[in-house]
Image 1 (cartoon, rainbow over the protein chains, first blue to last red):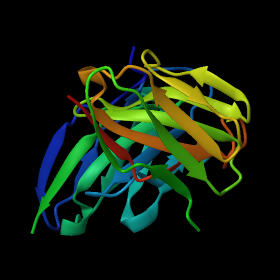
Image 2 (image 1 turned 45 degrees about the horizontal axis):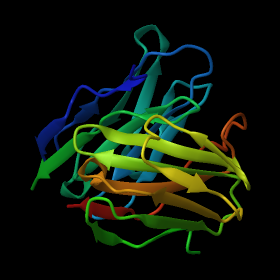
Image 3 (image 1 turned 180 degrees about the vertical axis):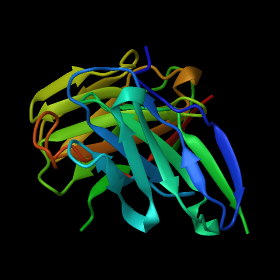
Length: 109
Length: 117
């Protein structure tokens, strides 16, 4: 069974809109959660990660994510998206590195 | 720094042919991984290695074999390619698979696009 799930498959936003991409995990024990981004034609790179401590994690390029244990969620947020944020976003978790199915974000200029 | 390098970048095979994908990393990482990326399914782990000479199965290992003869290299083999193996293959490496708070970050290669006809 998928241990990390992303429910938004394709999100289309206009520039300056706020973004929230959902990620839920379904396992117990040690929680290691990540968000990776894949820009068109490029390889995956880490946006941010959560291992413990402050549940609000800040990453690169203005992205942040909040770990909510009671909701088993680790949603990715950005207050104001740019056209350059167009990419595919993957949530990943657990030590065997299961990835969610990915969310394709299209930002219209 | 080269990071994680995959060769080849593109390949077209006929059903039944064999091939090997090469992944090389220059970061002295212990752990290496092979994934396949398919539309709507994200990345799925094929095989991984926690050190030179060791390999283990991931989520979708059938039809693939791997070898880690040298720490810096991780090879993925397809003995008899099938159309279902048409995919984009990504290699990744990391310092540590278990434990180490800041050491489970994966670094990815640019991918190999494989088509099996």
